[in-house]
Amino acid sequence: MQRSGTEVISVEPEVRAKRGVRAETEAVVAGTVGAAVSGAVALLLFLGALTPLWAVGRSVGVVAGIAVFAASAGAAGTAYMRSRRQPGQEWRRRIRPWQDAVDIGTVAAVHAAIAAVLTVAVFVLLQRSFEGLEVDAFIGTLAVVASAGFSGYLAYSSAAAMTTRKMSTLLVTYMAVATLGSIAAVEDPLWWEYHFSQLGTADDFSAFLFNSTLIVAGVFVTTFSLYLTRDLTTLAERGVLERAWAPRFYGIVFVVLGLMLAGVGLFPLDVSIALHNGCAAGMAASFAAMVLGSPAILRGLPRRFFVFCYAAFALLIGGFLLYAPIGYWNLTAFELVAFSLIFGWITVFIRFVNAITVDEADAPSPPGADAAPRPASRGVRP
Image (cartoon, rainbow, N blue to C red):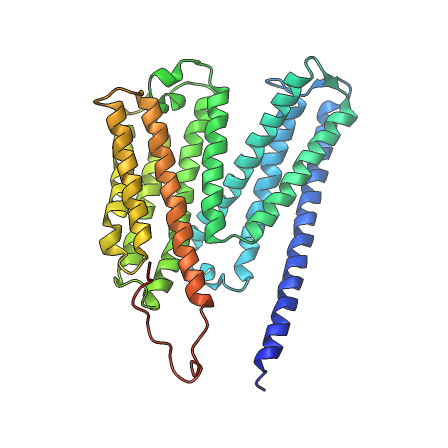
């Protein structure tokens, strides 16, 4: 039996509402489980003694950070794995099992790292605001329960509805939060006089956080390639992109960029200068290939996007000139500008492509489109 268009429109909001309620219910359950397990462990650790809000070693902040990391990782991983059954996610069920496992692991790790770093930062600020304060087992356990429960709920809600745009926002947030966390925890106050990679050379928690951030972010960028390739393939099939091989090219270059970024963290300067600099050069070359090659490879996208690409690359060159010949700022400042431009461009590129994909899909079909196939468009006008 064929349903009318009015009936289909009336059913769709109801289906979405039920799906949203189910996702919220599952998020609450995930947060509750994380809070209960974390609370039981925290109570055993805090019994019989007063505990500071933050200290290196036994403190409420350390326990809360570990609990938040575990709760967020479990919630985000579970939500992202279950979201494969949602409409529009069928393509994820066709990827290789090892790719799926890597994607789930990186999504879980990124959510967990963001939540843990923010949690530790809150407890550090609280300890400095209430100098000398120590709490009993009840207050300490309550703080851990609240932190783990809230983080687990938010992580599940975020990962359950992962989109290309949310992926890009998550990457930038993760890089900013984790990098600032490693800067705040560094023991050498003059690290910035050398270069940004100096953060990863010390044998302390700051170096571990910085290097692991680059490794996880690099693997996360490879996850981007799946979403980006899907969106670009959709545009190529609709005739927006003139180059049929463009999706595969950008998918491969994104994987190379991610692997090079992970290599920068995997091989710090004190481990191998050659491998570290080689990975950094590979990352720069991948970025240059995508930016400078975009007008020819991505022909069909709006011209304003290519203007943005050239502007971003011009700013990168300008930043280098301010470092090398002019000497306005040091290498650390240039590296910070370069990283900001690279990840800023990645974010805009992914969101731009996704926006065009959604606009093309939502475009009204002309009369008689049900009877005849829709003609392929010849690009998107500026």
